Length: 374
Image 1 (cartoon, rainbow, N blue to C red):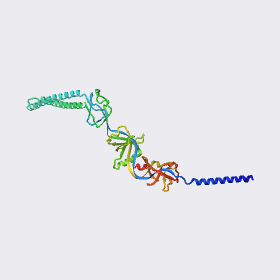
Image 2 (cartoon, one colour):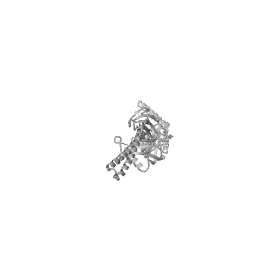
Image 3 (cartoon, one colour):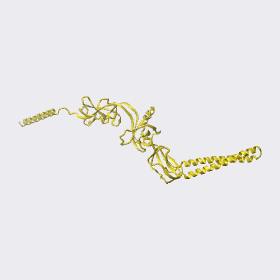
Image 4 (tube, rainbow, N blue to C red):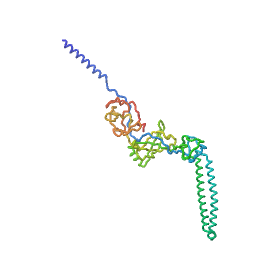
């Protein structure tokens, strides 16, 4: 009787548990949709580009030195200001050189008079030697003296020209349009010829932007540059919210740096508003060509799993499919997809951690980053 009682008790417990389980399933109802953000796959033309860090370099740099020794009597510019080609920068005390020029001119006048007199005497003796009134030896002496004095005159003329040149060196002018740097030698200082620089001038309009790219990009760069078009280069200073400066690729170095595996390139920029400054680091974008009809999705849509990269594609019934994709490259916040997607499909951009293939989703919004990047 005790065994039968226990058996009945277990039957009642089992029936109760079965009833509770069935009741629980009825209360659970259909699976709840998972909220996500989504975007539409678009097709558009995108640039094929290389992004690196570059460094601005002056288009030309001149270290101004004095060609003569003397005292700096005047400085005609303010350091750190712009100067034009031909502007007077320094005056070296010209008085010693003016005196040297006057001395050379006086010597020239003296020797010209002597040469003219010697020439007249030589002509007179030429007539006399023809009449045999004087000896040939006497004539030769006067002729030789006249020729020597003519050579002396030519030497004096050269000395005058040299004195004029040395005097002109006392007035130092800017050889280029540019911006002056720190004034290294001030007024009143004695300087030597061709000694230390007085000032350095940088030409910044136009300006170079130098940057290095991996050598594996060289073939593509040469390919598109030879195609008959100039490659566009953009440069943007850090933390600058304005549009990038526009330039063109003008220089490819003739050798690859074996230590870094990179090659040096330079772009030339008009730098009209002087946003680029020598020595400044900038973000560089070299545009090689344009890829038409590229498939573009927001970068946050692409996930990485054990089998590679994939995206969650939203089907018409609002369930998701995990689809593998082949990514070509990333541009800003977009990814270019070579294989796996087509234009018009919707992909999940936020909320992927809660998803499994076949899960039901509810689209709460759209980032639209791919469209913003167009």
